Image (tube, rainbow, N blue to C red; front, side, top):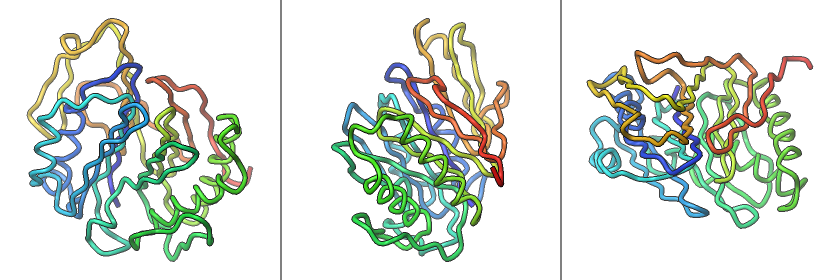
Length: 261
């Protein structure tokens, strides 16, 4: 299995703290040593880094940790391979263009033997995760267009996610830079930080940050992860089947896709 990290903020925010905690789980405090990747939205552009080596010892990850990248939406993934070889083509997050925007996707779980339906988008690597991403985008491209309301797209994503989850473990992060969609079947937790800010300590590294000195009173920053990253904050744990749509650090829609409903 793998570990996920996403961030949604109402203002460009330094992501070094959360990223540092997650990368320690890639071969140091956790077994997820089979590659990693991170994508930072900057306007309509995306600054992406990938490495097939363990994140805890990656020189590229070290550069990202020490470089104050600003982003309103970010998606990160550290991999423990179960489908597909350990190689750069199989590292998440995956990215494709649709309707003039970059869409970024990361998945934690396994759908054994999954193959995407034929369509415009094809996998480059050999993971079930990338095949799922292509299947989602091919569905949206066939049934929606650039003017389709976000609520309608979200409803489709919920139905698709529920169908995929019936075939295996499907924990999902998906963004087009404007919003972030999350879906949980097994493990996911989130925290929203807003004024008054306080300190936080990482679980996987001897690092503490005082968010009050790093933020303004108007900032809202939400972090979504597989497992909580800090030891001294209260995290909100998702239910199985729970989905949320985030924009600028806030949940704007949410629900629970019950089995059989």
